[in-house]
Length: 304
Image (tube, helix red, strand yellow):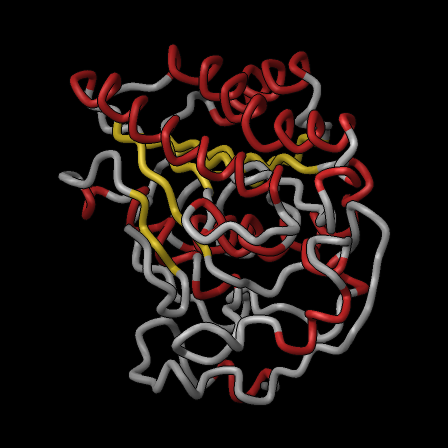
């Protein structure tokens, strides 16, 4: 899809979802972790040419992890175009991708701050929240999206270090950041966690990753009940197979890339741009009575 085609529609355009991205044809490829979206072919659609804001997050102050590429990047762009100032968290090795996304978001006329670091480091996670509050002048929107996914054919191939890294990145960081953020959140604030279809349909080669995503679901629903009386809503988004750099950094076996997403009822993989509206909905006042929900964006794969 070229820029002219993208410019002819936005997220409100009436379309056949089964026919979207029909020309998208990923080939087998590999990058070492954490990978760069700049080197991914074809490039994911982040909504940079299509997302149209309507002021639903005007004045909001957001912190997004895993913000350099994929779902996090699409969310940053959408939040900015909806009027939110944003702090972006990502690994230092992902600086090139992060700066591109920050530039696109800044074009919306909002403030965008970049604070790189490793989510496995509890000190960084706590400092991230403090710096976000200082930079934004407060905090009322948190998206815990940063994640690690590396396949292992057998549990005997799954090292202790990888298991530990996956849980630290996906679960512990969410806990550390959320715990540090809650004292700053006021009534009307929102927390959104990224889980996955893997929480419900775990792949045999993603034992550690799928386990973290099920944990995120439970964490979300428990914390939602705790914080709802304070006027703080907690929800989650569960993506299905989405084309991101995570897929080519051993997120799955390389031979699976060419058929990625074909098992969904829509018959295709999703794009990060198709996730961003779900995050905007859960962040906005439109979802004021939505609490403890896991919103599936799965291409039709059923969730409980």
